[in-house]
Amino acid sequence: MSKIGIVFKFETIRQLKKPSFWISLLLLPVAILSIFGLSALQSTSIEDNISGTDFSEKKVGLTDEAGIFSEENPMFVKVESEEKGIESINNKSLDLYYYVPANFASQASVKIYDRAEDTRLMSFNQIPFASALKAEIYKHIDPKDIAIIENNVQYETIDLDEEGKPTSVMGRAIIPLAILVVFYILICVFGNRLTMALVEEKENRISEMILTSISAKSLVIGKILSLIVLGFVQIAVFVIPIIAGVIIYRDNPMVASILSSIQLDPWAIISNLLLLVLSYFLFAGACTLTGSLVPTARDASQYIGIAIMGTIMPLIFFQNFFSTDPNIVTYILSYFPLSAPIALMLRNAVGSLPTYELILGILDLAISSSVILWLTVRSFQKNAINFSVVKPHFGKRKSWKRA
Image (cartoon, rainbow, N blue to C red; front, side, top):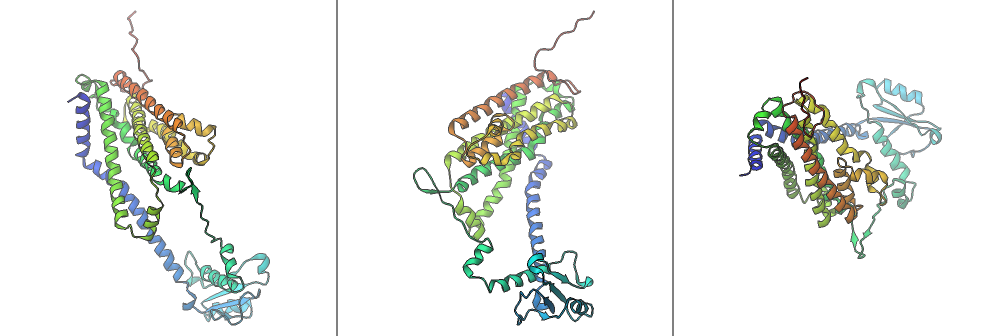
């Protein structure tokens, strides 16, 4: 077995045997599920609060000086004036009181009176009244105009491909964008671990011992390949339950709607997968290069943020990548090595990346990855036994002669 294979096997097995690896592996999906669970509980709580304001359970008074509601509306008890309505709230003959002023047409304001002891921190008393207000107004509006007023008109855009057949740009972009999300998760979750790949040997003062039995090239490449595989293991642990859930609940209306909108574009999917592998290798190289230049994990954590910021920079200019005519910012981000991964995958997903630019982008990532890997090997060779923050040094050291 080659030295690279030995390092790869050792690092992979060592990490897989650590309980901390599996704990951190499961923290992300557990955290996401917890967020969704809390969101569902919050929605249920809000619905309960809203349902608690149902008019059918309360005696509700109304003074309608604007003349909006009909005289025989059974939902409200007619009150002659605002003063009498306030008095009815105070003596508890009314549970809730609404006052619509005569200048409603110009002010569009309604006063709601309730007893303080019955009021929660967040009040939803306006919601049932707003519904009653709409129901009353709709009695005087032509039904065909209601959808326009409510902005509920459904617009269906049908895109035609070069052969004149219906297609969906968003449907084709779903899976390539999902691949981009995978890359984003990898850099967020594994960025720090990639940086620590070479720092731990320097911090433990064993790097010089390791380099007596194995070359820096084999050590660096083996560690990077191991961490790349471990990253994809984490993604598999995260994605497989999601796929299983989609298969189990495929008959759910929301899931079925999403599945029906997906359109497979083999070229976009395969090219984005290739960009994903090259991009992750580039990012891993940048992280390990940072780790080779610093002596401790604390120092490494200070510098890794630069690499991450450069990588996610295209997300700041997100809307630029949805234009059919890319501007200068789009081109710069597409070919600057650190920002190229997300920029290229975004453009490829939305169909604004021509084939020749895709090839140039792949070459850019491949060359940049090779250069960074070479720099990492040279840096670790020269700086492995330096235990203080060093200036980048990749060549031969000068020999100093005594005077």
